[in-house]
Image (tube, rainbow, N blue to C red; front, side, top):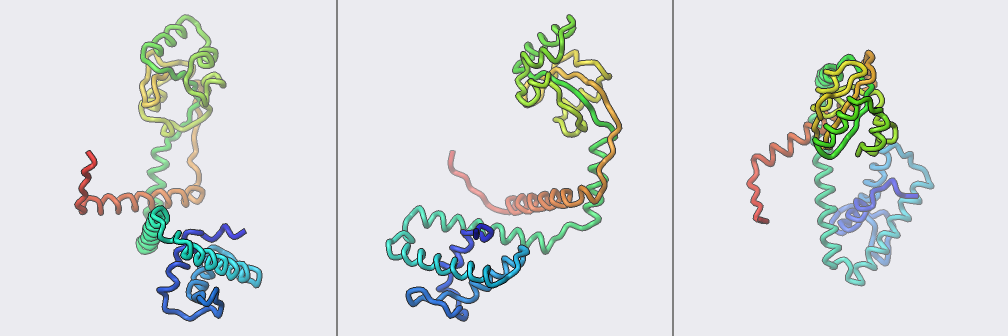
Length: 264
């Protein structure tokens, strides 16, 4: 019922309440006041998430804060607040909250531009290509097994039946190795490179190795591929660029830092 408030944030705010110099909410629990700035923070956070304040929601917030203060006091009384495991969880939660808050602030101060998103869209269309493929494959564990499959196919073996009998790919073997329609760039490079060199109806004459094992690939058909409109992928591209930006930030900080790892 109150799951939309992040519990660990609430716990930390309540625990930090005795450090906050702010007006009380005119509510106390066993003589300890609940700080108004904590209540205001929760209200602001909920409103930023689209929640509309009303008497019912206000009552839920207040009751939750009272319940948490009661439990906090009981935890203090029983010594749980000094428990080693609790202190570790508290430290991890504090670090996680600071980590997320910093990244949110960094993203706000360094927004992805419309121009960057449009450039990413052009690269996306280029990588996507102008064709999509319908193909089947048989995945086996060794090169020799793949060669044996090719030899069987050369003797007139049925590709779908062999895939059902021998393929290690649980996602396609029951469908006779059928992978459906897909753009080449959705596959790992050795697979994609081989696929785009095949003619319709033909299969690979040599095994293709990827990190998943050894493949025998058959191209069933091709058709024209139209990239989705910019507005349909804009949000996803922006998130990808944002994540790359954050990854670069971490790498840059790591490059400047002195990190010593003596575990070995």
